[in-house]
Structure formats: structure tokens, C-alpha cells
Amino acid sequence: MRRTVAGALAVLAGVTCLTACASDPAPTDVGVAWAPQGGAVLVTWKDTGRPNRITIEGVLSESPSYVKYLPASEPNKWQIPTSEFPPDGNYKIVVETGTSQGGVTSKPAKSPVFDTDGPVRPSAATVAQQGRGVLIKWSVPVAPQDFTPNDPLDVKGTKSQRYVPMVGRPGQLLKAIGPATTSTQQLIKSIKPPYAFQLRTQNEWSARIGGDVLGLTSSISGVVPPKAQFSVPIRARGRVILQQVDCDLDAPCTTRRATPAGVPVVVLTQVTPGSRWTPAARGATTSGGYYDIGVPTAGSRPYKIIVPVNTKANMFTGTSTSRPAYTKSVVRITSAGFAGGDTAVAHGSMVTVSVAVAPALNTTVMLQAWNRQTRRWTDAKALAMRGGRAALAFKAAQPGDFVYRIVVQGAMMFGRPMDGITTPGLQLHVR
Image (cartoon, rainbow, N blue to C red; front, side):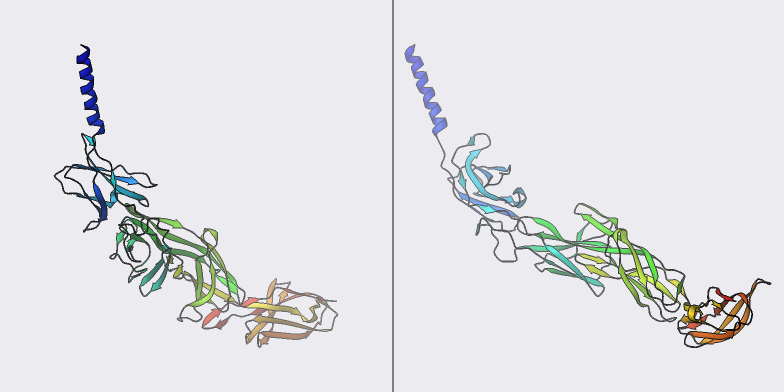
């Protein structure tokens, strides 16, 4: 009985040693290279015609959960799609002998370390109008340090990444408008806002979005006063609203309203009927998209306010125009009253009343006096105005309190009418 138990123990010990200690020869010469058609890593190795297990091992990076078993009848090569590799990491390919049922039966063999660094995202995109389209340029920062220089999967050359220009419009998906290029500029021959421009930057490992440019539409409201005293500035007021396109890769583009500060605004005018519109004043929006611009005035004329075509960094703003509004000019009184400012004079003395206006008109004005009995203004004397000035000297014949005013008729200026004006009542006390 003892001998039987001892024999059984000896047999069991031998079996255990065979299972735990036996090891198949490890594969050798594990190499990685780019698959001929691209988009995958080609793994090759050498062994003695045994089944293999292939995994990806992270080097200071988390190992992805990728496992592939190949039977012994398969050749010693396998392609792993680049999508199986996490971006911006360092990895090795591990090849071992083994099956999914029997497990691993050899030591691991590993490839050289390689990185999966993606492309460098473009930055500092600028846009400029060119004909009916735009020219977009972008710059690319210096690539970060390569911690696995000259690894087997490094692509040689300074232009290993390419840029696919993409444009999105409201309600549409972003779509490519040209082939991938190594250039750092893109001419779009015919495009109008609203749109969003992006670059899909790609290299052998992955793609990233950057180099955004926004093509904005604008709308502007504007108000100018209906009348203005000659040469006294008026205020043009209103608001600018922009429409901006926002795009995601997997959803239609949407629009949203923006009211930023700093949008240029120009006030245009026509000096004479039928003449071209020329700038009269310039300004910019403040917070909320509002603007308030002082506008020098002269003769009667129409005004309209525009948002000019504006390029600023990575934004292109299309033009918009308010409705024209007519501002009628009114003769401006620069001075009116009695000589010396004396409104109390002695009976029988000489008094001089005068008026000066802008513009410097040559016309006839009327001196009027207030009639207390009829309670009406009555014409007293027509005065010649030369160079915008008129004066009359008369004797204060009767004592009492009197009120005078001077009526300046309307005129034509630059082919448009200008309203006249009447001075305030001029008080005179004769003692």
C-alpha cells in the first residue's frame, strides 16, 4: 500500500513539472512597418510554425485591450489598423506562442518602441478677401519633442502631415472642398458668409480639427435726426447683429447671434443728388453691438450706415447697410442782438440790431416787431445779408418796451433746400 501511494505521488510530480516547466521556443525578430496600402501596422516575426498571440503593450502608456490569436497554419505576419492604437503614446507589439484555449506557452518577444503621435494642430489662421472669394492662411506650431526618434514607423520628411480644407454652412454637415494638401494656405474662389472653415489635419496615425475661420453675416439698424443745424454734428445711433456658424463633425451646422464690440461702422452720405456715397464718419460697436457716432453736417443730405467688409484675425464679416435717412439742414444763428449787448437805451439814441448765420449766406432777411394790439409779428424792415451778416441802425424814437426778431429765409445749398430760421425775441427797453 505504501509503495502504491509513493508511486502515485511520483507520477503526479512528474506531470506537474511537465505542465509548469515546459516552454515553447519564443518567437524572434519581431518587426513593425507600415502596411503597403497604409492605414495599418504590419507586424512580422519568426518562429517554428507554432500558433501565436499578438498584443499591444504600452510603454509609459496604458496598454490597449487588443488581442489576436493566429493558428500555426497562418503566415508570420499580421496587420493592426491604426485605429486600434491610442493617440499620442509609446507602444510595442508583443508576439508569444499560444492559443486562446491553452494560453501562452512561450516567453514574449517584443518589437522596438514606436510612438503614435498625431498631427500638430494648426493655429493663427487669418483670412483676407480676394476677388469674390477669400484667401485663408494658417501657421503650425513646432512639433513637440519626439521621445522615440527614428523609430520604425516614423515617416520621413518635414511634410508628413496634410490638411483637408472643410466648409460648413447652416443646416449642412462640414464637407471637404478640396484634396489633402501640404500647403499652409487655401484659396476659395467664390464664397459668401455665413460659413465656417476648418482644417482636418491628418498624419499616419490620426486626424485633428483646427485652423478655424468664421465667415459672418451682419445686419445693421441706424437712426439719424431728421433735422440738423448747419455745421453742428448729429449722432448716428443703432445696433449691429452678427450671425455666426457653429459646426461639429457629426451634426449639421447651426447659427447663433453675436453682438460683439469692435465691429467697424461707417456713415456714408451723398453730398449732391446722384453723387456717389462717400464716408462722412467712422466708428465701432461697443458692448452689445451698439454704436453712437458723431457725424459732421453741412447741407441737407441723406445718410446711411454700413458695416464694411471686415477681416480680423480668423473672422471675415460681410457687409450690410441700413436704410438711407434724409437729414435736412437748418440755417444756424451764430449771433443775434443789439450792438454792445445793451438792451436798455435812452430815448432818441441810435440802436443797431444785427444777426450772423452759418453758412455765410447772401440773401435778404426781415426785421419784425411784435404788435401788442394785434398780437402779431409785423414786418419792420428788409435787410440785405452779405457773407452771413446783416445789421440795421435806427433811432429809439419812443420810450417803452419793444420786442424784435429777424427772420432768415431758407436757401439752396449743393442742390438741396436748407430750412430758414428765426432769431429768438430781442428785448429792447427805451427809457
